[in-house]
Length: 152
Image (cartoon, helix red, strand yellow):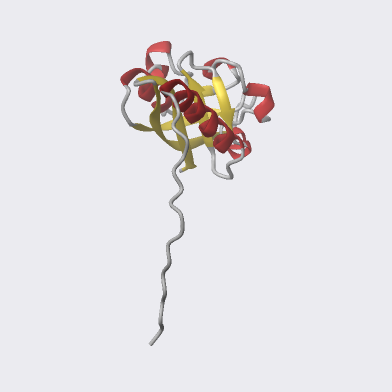
């Protein structure tokens, strides 16, 4: 039978931080995490600007390179959303407000849904992705949303 011994040394207590430091650090940590993630993910701020996106997220959403879309509004960075009809029409403004990243941002709640995306200028290639979004809170309010994608 194995014998396990446990010993405790000094307890590490992190330095107290103000709510301002905690909030800005929270968003900054998510930005760094998303930028370096292997999984397709996206972080937008309250103004819907792309704060960070993983390389695999750019590939899946047909957006090019992360540096091409960071800082741009999500729907102006080349993201083309289509409906699920055979005609593949572009979504209207009312429909785009209901996509998970924006719905989580505006509702302050988890959101999930399918998206059909097409690269700008590519008439035949599109992808269906499952998007799961959560609001990112700072100072008790919604500062942005974090979305993970999976190809369907």
